[in-house]
Image (cartoon, each protein chain N blue to C red):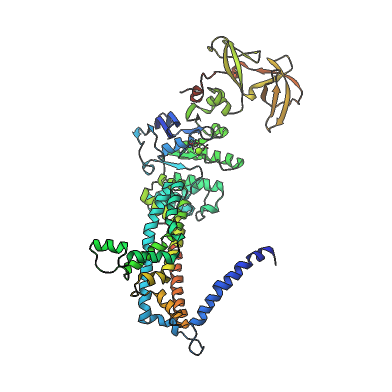
Length: 270
Length: 360
Ligand SMILES: Nc1ncnc2c1ncn2[C@@H]1O[C@H](COP(=O)(O)OP(=O)(O)OP(=O)(O)O)[C@@H](O)[C@H]1O
Ligand SMILES: [Mg+2]
């Protein structure tokens, strides 16, 4: 065996052990019938109302979360690009800081703030808002955006800082105003960053169960919660694996769509 | 080149920090159809000047006029000129064709018009057939041509070029120099060209503007700049030269290292210290005693067309001499210079004057 192959061996073992085998196991359980035979029952179970509802809510929430993150992060990255490296790396640092705290702790902190008697709760009551915050879609969305925003900021900022000033000046020189510079040069050049940001926000928010567990107030269940329950309390691994498989297909499909737009972005005519 | 002034820089001052002017009271007239070159060492403010003309930088003081209209605060996209950037700055996400079409699409030109223009521009820069290539699949020289094509399809009245050949190897650079001259003649537009390569400046330009530390040192035709440098900086920067301390005895006679040299200059006073410039190709080597000052050949290298030699005189100064005749190291020779090949210049009185040079 040559050196190159030897070096890649640990990664190969890692990949097989932690990606390929688990995937095969999901397939195995997902398509396994009662007597060990092949069945589509667990896959088709997604069509049942108690699964389809949470799936649709999850999809909707994760799409909204992704869009909100994009709307916050893109202008931020644009501004930071102009601000220069020194100042912007400090701002980035501030945005990343919450990631140093444990995900679960951060979400518990939000539960504290939003729950009856919490700071945000009291404040909103004073403003005249009646009713609970915890247990609303808004609370879950807030938790998602808060937790996943850094994953949108980082790749966008990276893509943005890679753009050479003179590339933008060239566009201005050729008659583009700031809006055109933005849509015809910056946007297409940061598209790979947008794609990775969207991926890194959309996928975890589609599959999350921690955020909805804590901030959903036992009233809102996302597809992540359903799958988690099948694996834990219900001990129905077959159904859990089947639903996971469907979710994976959804993610793969959305990635395919994104990549399709990525190549479209190269044929500029907007 | 004609008499119509298309761009006028009026008393331009630019500084990035409060205490240091990058450009200081710079005045410059650029004529229609002129090939004008800003020449100077790295950091002297060439790019900054070009960026002010292009609109990417606003001067702290002074005005920029285009066709007589004040455009000092007009954004770049409203200016009737185009730039070829120092590092080409092609759009990495667009192929050759789309790069060239960028400006035309913004202006809303028709599909047919754009197609014809692309074909015409690619032919002009000898790049037809590469329409679909991405910039990162092109060599430096090819990217350069595309950057030029992308600029000229917009039919600018003035093309700004910032060291466009800086990244190319010598042979390609020379080829491109000829192509740029041809291009300029075919297009009949004004070129404002920036380089720190004096040979390039002399080869290509109608007018050379020698800059140093934000000041214009001298401005004129390549012949004027080369043959009649106005100060030691220009003489030193443009071409090889011997710059020596001299004593202006009286009109038409100068003393260098104790030897008397007849010259043609007048009016520098009597027994006044001056700078003397002699180009290495203007020195004739004669038999010992026949010239103005004797010396020994201490170094020789073959340069292709000529030999480059160093002749050391008794005071220790090494004269740079270019000659087609060969004199082996150790040969005793005598230096002769025709009077009109000796250039006399006043010594600068202060450092400020040294940088300021002489205005037109
Ligand atoms: N944005 C800026 N901020 C601060 N200083 C700057 C800026 N742009 C240029 N300078 C300074 O202005 C001076 C002139 O720069 P400029 O780019 O005009 O030089 P140049 O003559 O084009 O040099 P080169 O031949 O190396 O390209 C330099 O000392 C440079 O450091
Ligand atoms: Mg420069």
